[in-house]
Length: 404
Image (cartoon, rainbow, N blue to C red; front, side, top):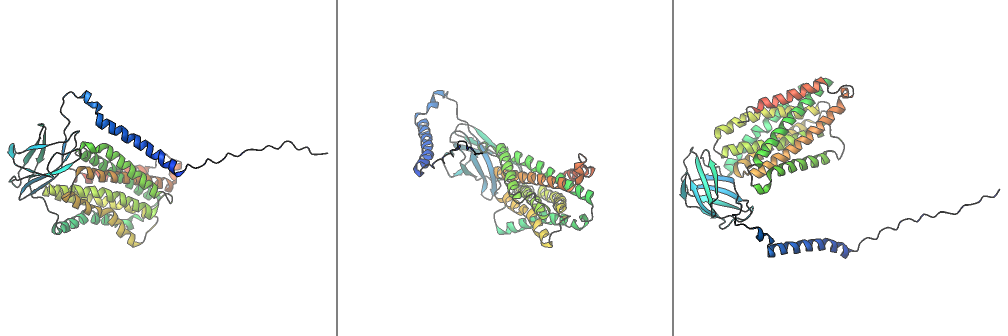
């Protein structure tokens, strides 16, 4: 029997598309940009919006970002944010007009900044009201609740602030980490309780940081779109840390404790900003109050850092740099808060911290689910619920000493 071969079917493979020549690639980048520039030039030259001009004055905005009080008077750092250049015409202090100098002089364009120097003999401990009047008659007020000399950027000031920042950040976190030997004696349910307690601590810090960031964003110049900036910064921080943390799988043990320390450290940066700003504003008593409150507040954070290390003991040196990672940013925060405080940058720092804390919450939650087998048979173990409640309650109770 002869085999009869059917007609051979030939499948033509698609030809690979030829790559564009280099000049064509550059052309399709330059052409849209050229057309965009041409359209923008036409818009500026022809000014088609002038048909809609009904004589209304332009919108003027002025934000006070920093204040310095010294022997020569009051110095205010301002930022313009309106639709047209702004001209500062007059300055009042306590309803009286005062001479002033502007550095740099001239009109302030959108987002431009300048120092306003007022030779006003302020009185220690008293309140003063500064009013800036623009050329169009718009007024912007700035209140000085308690007049006190602003600390200068000198090594004599920075060293005591560093010591105080270490007392607020590093010392209490280190004390919390000293509970580690006690934590190692807990069983599986105790471990679940500790991890849930850590999630409760971090959840409180996340809400607290996000709330403070949004509040500061409201004080920044409108052009920065403060609230949108906070949300975007928190989201980007979360995604970046998630990508870094997951590049080698889900973190556990020392890696997880490191991420917890990082998130808490970014939050402590915001706490340092608050303390430094309190001293700069002249609220020395308020600063001491915040120092004592933050110290007690941060001890609980040290316990949260130690929780993931119970099953995987690290080398002793790890506890040193975990305490530094979580607590040392408070020192930097105090320096920035007392010497170069600005609402938009403070809001940005707190937003980044909030995003980092959220990433840690997700990682600790995932680690807890993998560690506790009871999640497969029950919805939520009682030990987990108890840990969450205790963690939130501890942070709320200690925050009573901080919020004023």
